[in-house]
Amino acid sequence: MAIEKTLAECARAVAWEASSKAGSGTSFRLNTDDLYPEINSAFRELREESIELELGFYVTEGSLAALPTTRAATSENYSVVDWPTTVEAIVRVDVLVNNHWDKLERIEWENIRNVVSHVSNASYARPTHYAPRSIGTVSAATQTAGKIAIAPFCQSGRYKLSTIEHWTDLTDTTHKFIFPSESAFRWMVWNVVGRITTRDDKTGRYEKAIREMARCAQKMGRFATKAVPSGGTMIRARRRWG
Image (cartoon, rainbow, N blue to C red):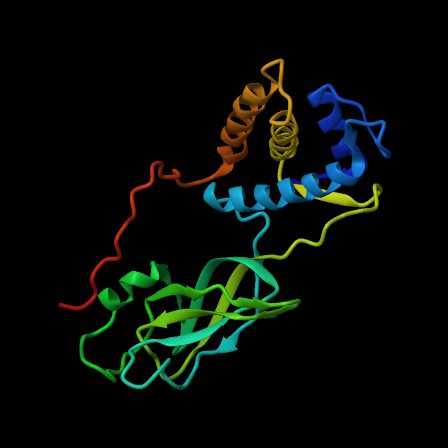
């Protein structure tokens, strides 16, 4: 099931919940020139939130590509592939080696040595982990792709990225956003309301927006099959080599 809402419908809902009339020109406190970019920004944040809730609605599965046949550097036990400039987030990495699929376990870059042999230039049958090594760089208007480490190094096979792609802002009020549920739409609306009411909130509407976002997030995740961990504890990668 999917819910479609036009930019105009999103703006109407935000203005209603914020109790503020929106329009174009200096006579409006809630100017559409500012409102539309905030709605698009909140939609991006919704897609990020969906990953945390383990909802794959906005995930795009890429095509198969060959694993690198060379190591990231001499004596390293991992390889690197590009973090595409067209995506905002890497959700999962799968590898196909000897006709067998594996979903790689994500780890932090600082833990890469925990999942490869301490012996330099060692060779392995198949990768088991991946780690975002760099998200890329920008110079003026030019973006350079980042890198994803795949470990341990494997001399053959293919991989596939599942990602959240970049979102191009909607500016035409008849164009549509797509949501996995009405709750997801309301989460985005209350997100924008919260942003608006931080400027001059006199009625407690900001606190209400935060409460409503939390309520919508609970309902958004009701189809998830796995509990989402809470708290900020970093989970260390299991050590693969003794």
